[in-house]
Length: 523
Image 1: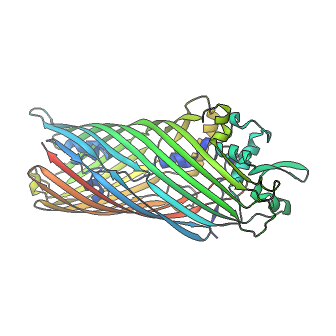
Image 2: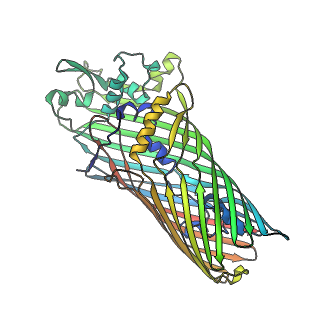
Image 3: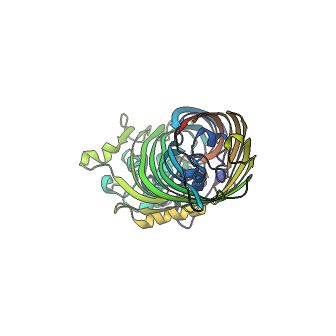
């Protein structure tokens, strides 16, 4: 049996982990990722904090654009393919996904200055995929601990509403409204007290035990964060490079998920045969951030870099639709036990639109230090023979904060989510390193990246690791780079959250391949 994780909070988890579909995991998704970039950037593990000379520096340390004294345009198409293995309560399952993507695309305009200490300046205009959400997760297993219906029962019980409440106006999640509508949750008298319970657990509660159910969950996600960026950098006597960039990240996240649950007890008279909850969730919005950096070159062969990324301040909109189908076996008279409902059952038939929620979010801070050793650093770049470079990055995964963007959800609710983020996540270090060897017009590159575990609880094993290699060709102002990146990712997924008992989760292991090509021209 897999480890069970119980998160102790200062208030009831059930009061916020399901409400309005907003959870701490949503904040982590927008901050814990492996950014895209040019093929050259990806080939050297993403270590661009002190190297410069690549348009992707605008997203890492914009001072790196200060090394440009001419202009260039680049285009970076990409393709990714992945397989995710899910281990849930001792059972293995897997899913595959592939999709086209893109890396840094845009132009850098660099020019030299004839007079003064500032030898050159550069402006960069680009777009980059800083987070890729295209993925599919699938896991299954037998659960004798809990039922997904309990998350809905718990939310309803915490609301204090009567079981026959008018659902379209109730302050409940769509899933809980559907569970009530289909009688997947109902009331039960236990020791003289009326409790809201999930039907799969009804007989088990009366017997003082727990139900046995087969569960499976499939999650398909697509979209990403595409960041528009404008950067400026200046070069002081080829010793000190300063830069700043303004980023405008655009969020497009779409998730469809299905959780199935079937009775595994063999009892055909326990008022439950199966239940399925389908959900469609969308999160869209736009943000703004600022990146500042410097690169210092004390000697011709050494470069040191420092960078700071402010949080992205997002204005987001989320919508949620879904449906529940449940077979309650013999809870009702024959012919009436298969219950179905969707958002139309709750809203449309009453002339009410499906709610759309507005919210604001600040992402983590990032702090970067970097060093590079350049082989035969000289003014004539054709005589440079390569480099070694490394970055260390510190990210505050516990710092994101939500605020309400409308009157539909109170700030006290988001304060609860913010407290959960603070208690769930910790700051972590990321490490990136890479190198290049140049043979006249041909270059070979290797890289490595490691993104640390953002979870506070040691039972949750998570990390991102990248292994990369590539080739480059440069001649007469034209260049082309080709890179393969292999990602080894570990994470966890909670099928649902409960506040009155330990939470079970799936361990996920993902192998992802990325092929990135960059073509460019100097002008």
